[in-house]
Image (cartoon, rainbow, N blue to C red; front, side, top):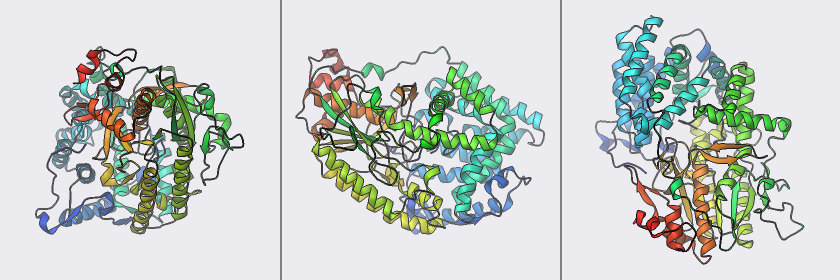
Length: 637
């Protein structure tokens, strides 16, 4: 993941969705694009390898202050891409310019850092993210133009002044959520955390590829090298600057526009909704769990698959079994992490921060792995709470999948056999749903082509990115075609998918099921409570609607209450609306449901994102519903 984790990959399994292209013209990375190759998909980005002569942990924490070989490699790679290719996707342009800036930072080309930061900011499609996009690298460069880095005290003092000037121009009310997230992450940034992350993630990846790593990996190492050697000593100043900036709006009450759209549906027919995720804690839904009429069925509430797609009796994934006695403590730490990441002062965040500060790098790595597994374990239950919100007439069917995580890939590699089993399980699941009259199915998970490539490398099935890329293309096509066929075979079921939290174009990276387009399949992005796009939401022409995906109340297995964010949360809000519509008018088809959602959605922000309006939609469908008035619909029309 990126942008909404402390460091890429800290918690959520990359397969879950738990955190519209602009019309701006694309930057051409070559002077004469007529003779250059257009990069229209992530898989088309050229891959070149760099051979590490030391593990990533030694690269970052070793004595070398100037990793010249890595810098030279990236300079050559960047030049070759610029001379031979051009990007059409704005997100890909930002990523490439960010790689250029990494080199400029490493080589102390401060004015180039400023220029690139401003270019990246101009390409940012989301208003809130644009307020702070590339702000910190630019501040560092402006400081370095005034004060020598070697003079640490003077540099820190000037850095704090430059931060204050930069933050003074930020629309803090607009960017408050993003600033809070940065502050929460910076408070957790320690050398022990960095070492734990690098040894448990990057060292593993490097070993699996025999130390041959692609340009993006090298760029990440350079960034981490700079974070450890240059930014950690300035973290106090950054935390102070962020805190003072947020204090400017501490008393500003932002309007929760999303809650004003809520509506309760108590009447109508009971609708069966499938939550196709990592499992539901049935004890938390005593009056809503669907019960299989087949008394001989292995799973009483639906279907549940193990990691190798065998059937299991339990509703929840069993991967956490090795540390089952720690689940309650780990869930409380996870709640604390979420609170801390969003800079919330709670008992849970204080507990997490205290525990976090006491860990050695080895313990830090172990905690990161366990929290990743716990986040995946709790994911389906949290989604089920959102899907059933404010609706009495509903049954929940549990469909459990034990999705791969970083720690499991070596034991359960994603290969052709895995893809075939996944397609077979999906096909079986859709038939099971049809048999039992499911009307809505929520899918807050996805696979992308880059994820499959990573899986091939992490599991050791492929040793080079080039071979992994070629193999992953075929595997992705098999998966996407298989899922599309399965969903198309059940036109009476509305399938609702999360877009993903990578802040990327789902068509460019090639993501499934998020990129599937069918009359009975919709994909959902995330806005915040003020109806503005979240910094993490993925986007693209395949995204049909947006819903709130920020600070939504949920429960983890066992009942621990907390708040979650992500397109994993916005998707079930749309599933919830579809179920409410069907409860009032059971004869609605998926096509009609989508049409009515679109008719009463409002176009929000400068991108005119279609945000669902539950109360207006329900009131148009059934004006006699409690809480409806002419004003509800009129406010939309």
